[in-house]
Amino acid sequence: MQILIIGAGVVGLAVARAAARAGHDVIVAEAADAIGTGISSRNSEVIHAGMYYPTGSLRAALCPRGNRMLYDFCETYGVAHRRCGKLIVATNDAERARIEAIHAQGRINGVEGLELIGGNAARDLEPDLSCIAALMSPATGIIDGHAYMLALQGDLEDHGGAIAFETPVERLMPMRNGWRVRFGGREAGHLDVDALVNCAGLSAQRIARSIEGYPAARIPKQVLAKGNYFAYAGRPVFTRLIYPTPVDGGLGVHVTLDLAGRMRFGPDVEWIASEDYNVDPARAASFYARIRTYWPGLPDNTLVPDYAGIRPKLTGPGEPAADFMIDGPAEHGMSGLVNLFGIESPGLTCSLALADDVVTRLNA
View 1 (tube, helix red, strand yellow):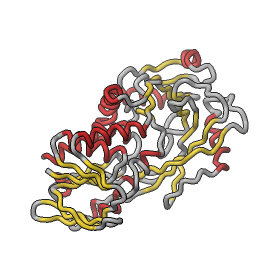
View 2: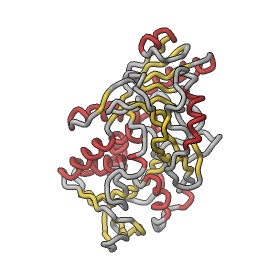
View 3: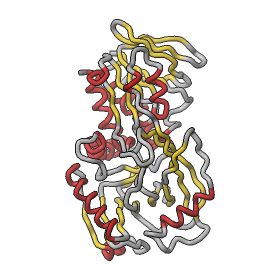
View 4: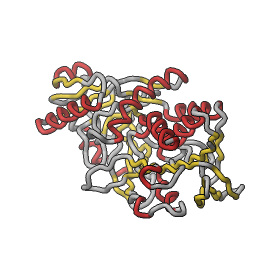
């Protein structure tokens, strides 16, 4: 079967690799001139463990499995990563109840190694931390996201797959035994394929609207949540990721580390109407306030605007968080078509498990 994957971000590359390894003829259409230029290049590069997500959700099913698959992939393909662990901290009794609930949910989800510890035990691990309790997750880690995507691309190409860069998809038309895809760009034209997977990230809804005959009612709204990051100008004081209890739209302004040893804070949640990647230095004031709830010793004038990412959410402020949406033939009734909507965090962690799920749906 010839399959076209739309989008060469981390999820698109993982789906393409899985399809190629399953013996399919795979082409990836990417509008940009390189892999991973969108959502995949602007995140925390965290390997999540999966303790937050409600029972029965795709996130709850895919994240713990994807976590284990991703560590195995990194070991096999030599992708730089570190299983540094993380602490979700409580600074008052209400937050203690929240992390106890997260602990219980994580155990239901099959997350390995979770442990509730007291404030003194947390400070023994991280002396600069201020909290009354913490949930320790040893399965959480960090990864070189670009190296991971390069490894996916390499394995895809080793199995006969290819990526067509600067190839924007303009129209998708069902035919008797497959699909006709119309492309723009320098080599505009069309291609006939057996199946399609829409992994276009921020453009997923736009691509879906270009599919002839696809039910418009099945295309969910898209709400953009910008996440700003600030770098810390001093030497890192934490050796693990430090997370507050979750907030509306995200997991709170947390401590992130990278493999080069740098420490940064973010992301926050800034609801926006259109794509904008500028970090407003004035937002630092709210960062100082949030960070000092768990690190009172944060010095003044040490936060520097770093970068921003945008999450393609399916629900907005004040609404219950939506799950990933995988819309396949069983749902919409059109053969050989899978649309992925709202694939945000923990999309990188879930990518390998998500890819297997998508290929299974195409083969059904």
